[in-house]
Length: 126
Image (tube, rainbow, N blue to C red; front, side):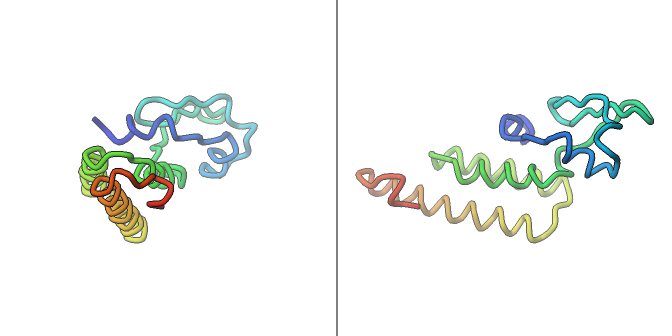
């Protein structure tokens, strides 16, 4: 499974964000569509264009939200492996990778506490 399949439901990239990324006014975008692995943008000046979700800050935020929302150690470990492969395949700024790593370690510790003490609640572990 690819990371885009995990994050797609969480990605909300607006027309204004796309226009800003492309450096064009919004009116030049005829339409856009969220495809499984890329964003498709039809521009009035040059036709169709594909943009990687990874180009947007929302991608980084969606990865962070996925880590924070894990409720199971196995799922978190799996997500960690997927993110590791993602970071090996694509170039991310060190600060982004370090941030994800820190969130992952924090969430893993929280889930370990919950696993070791099943009577504690998720709210008290945060």
